[in-house]
Each structure stands twice: as C-alpha cells, then as structure tokens.
Image 1 (cartoon, helix red, strand yellow):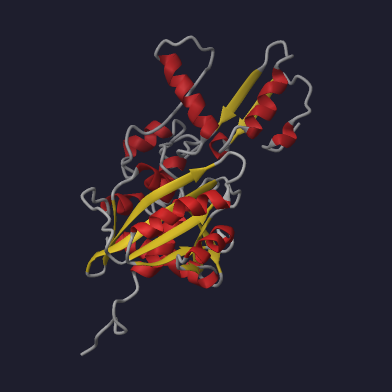
Image 2 (tube, rainbow, N blue to C red; image 1 turned 45 degrees about the vertical axis):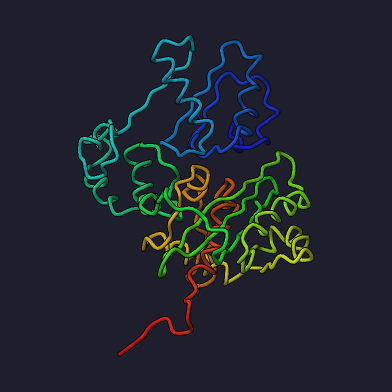
Length: 329
C-alpha cells in the first residue's frame, strides 16, 4: 500500500511495518504523525526510514538522528540508527566518497561520482557525502554570505535609511529589515524585528510596531513592501505619514538579483544575526519570466521574510547616487 506523505495517510488500520523514503523532505510532523500513530494497536510495529542527509529544516530526520546519537551514547531508546557519511565537507576527497558510499566499487562506479562534482556544492554534500547543510541549493551562497559579516557595524539614526517589510504567505511570520550605505557602493543590512503567530498575524499590531522604527530614522526615504503579502499593513502606515512603496513583479525579480550580486561581490555587509542568516540561507530560487528568478516564498518551504525584506531594501541601497553610473573615456 502506497500513501501520500501528508495528512491523507490517515485511516490505515494498525499497520505492522511502515517505510518512509526521503525523510529529509519532511519539514513538519504532519505526515510522520499521520503514519506513526496508526501503529499503536499493532503487535510488533516497526517504522523504517531512508534518506540522504538533510538541512536545518528536515525536522523529523534531525530528531531521529539526535535520538540515534543519544542512544549510541547510552540513552534508553530502542531506535536503530545507521549512517554512512563523510567526516568532513571536502568534496574532492576520495576518502570521503568511500566513507559515505559503502557500495562504491560494487553498485556505484567512482567515475559517476567524479562526473557529479560540478553540481551545486550543497547538493553534492547531501547526495554524495551525506553531510548536513544549512539549506539544499540555496539562492544565496553560504560561503559568500559568511564573508559579508561585520559585527562592528551599527545603524545611524540620522543617515539615509530604507526599510523592508515582508510577511509569509500563510500570515504566520513577518520581518522588518533596515539598510544604510556605508561608503561608496557598500551598504549594511540589519534585521530589526520579527513576528510569529501560530494562527495569523495581526496587521494592526504589525503596523503599530513598525511605526516606531520608521520614526526612529529621521532620514527615512521609504518602507518597501509587497502588496501580495503586506498591503494591509502598508495601508495603515501611509495615513500616518510613513512613505511606503510596493515592489513586485519584474522589479521584485530585479531586487532578488541585486541582493545576490551584492552578496557575491561583498558590497553587502551584515552583523551575522543568527535569524537573518538562517532565513537567508533557507531561501530558494524560483524561475520567473524568461531567464529571471525570484526568492520563492512558498518554494522555500519555510519562512524567508527576512530574506525578501533584505532584497527589497537592497533594491534601493544599490541605486547609483548620481544619474551617471559608468564613465567611459
């Protein structure tokens, strides 16, 4: 019997054995709970799970791994956990390939591994080395993002400032980000506030909590938002004299590309805030139009409001200070 990996799996009467494949893709406990607790009346139930390594959002896989490691250290748990993974992240180390692929030389030919070394490093590490990563195939590369960290930076209440606001499609998460120029074409982004409500966010509350930040910066140019997610909040802020502007469509795609370019070039700087970093490295790319891309809110499968808000402020922080951006001759 084959069942979908969601709540539709309910309704099975006391199965003895359940197999769950690609456990790393379970970002919440919905499917796990649907299947696991149908086994309570079985005489000798077993759940067999199989998966490559996951990322920080692989909730069920990470929980089982923690239980397995604890059991190996002596905790009282009847779990059986078996892992073949490389001891480090070196993708060109043959010893790592051997450690994570016990069938190498039998069912897996070494040339097949060599041919996949040009794939995205995060994908190679999870699929071949069975190493955990922050996010699989992220929109923003982790190494370049880490290189942009500067903990000494602080926002100046008197400098030209841009604010970015975004809410998640399910209206359970939100984030407010600020950006200011440092010198030349470098700029600084900082996560100011996050919101979470397990049911739904209150747009009036968010507006009331955004207003003090807007008034804090005496030289605020604009608060950028998306009408797809934050229109109700913006409509409450505008009558209070707070300048707001909608960034959507092709302009949003441009903002996402500008964020990636600013990170890769090192023009963007950040303080290394844990939550901002977590959301930035969780963002997934979504094709948009003919060759363009955007940060997909739903495609990321987790809240990436801070990432989207960072892209919105980057769109303004990367504008040329003069009408002439490139001089020739």
